[in-house]
Image (cartoon, rainbow, N blue to C red; front, top):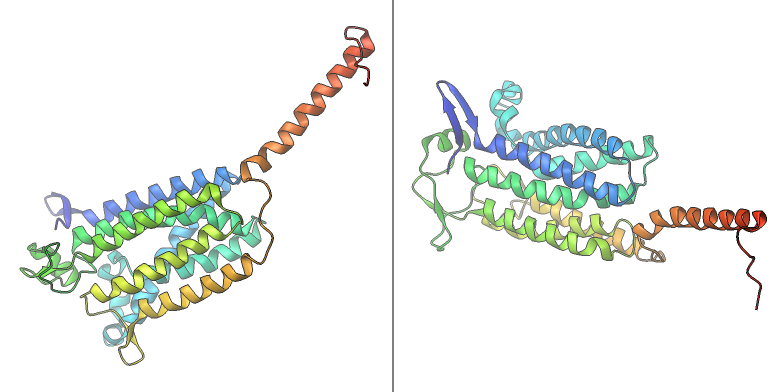
Length: 300
């Protein structure tokens, strides 16, 4: 729609890049906010978030290259081209890479794994939702032709050059469909967060919900470089979505075999302070009784 947000001479400020940056900043803010709710150190989470972004972007591009290897193998120099660097890549590649990195990071710094994953789940959802708006602005990851009343028509020639988007054809705005689905997932996660019974269930809910949404959204995608498995039966993202849903279901089964938390995270954090306050009050009263300022309370 509007692939270039600002143009000054030969300088172009891409709308996708701006919205991607906004999405990352919002995601970091949400992760820090939810992390503090879990009693996690904000400075450590900020360092963790920075590395997650770097690893996630690399992973997304690696999976993009793998799924489009038919083109890259004939032009290997394109792997390091400006077009590849500017491309957003495949989200699942970023998610898988970031998850594997997170497993090593939390172990290295002795962070509570499930609490960290829970804190980042809503952050990923809202950041991804904003990023998909950038895809829509750039015409990237476009949908199939349609006569549906929500269909959109791209007319910007730069969009064609950037993403190969068909011009003058009514297409499913699949980027907006996915953004709306992610916003709904974000709302569900935020609603569930204060009601969770076990650490880890928020992250598993995110993985399961997004896997279902992505599987069905793939049927509306029209960009040809999707990567396919089983003789074209499923796209690469659909295949990963199925594996993600099965994995999330298995992990949820294992998680719910554990006894639920008996107190909330907020109560757990306040308990030591409350206990300390009661001990201090008791010590002060004993001192006052010893000094004769307060009469001792007799048992009844």
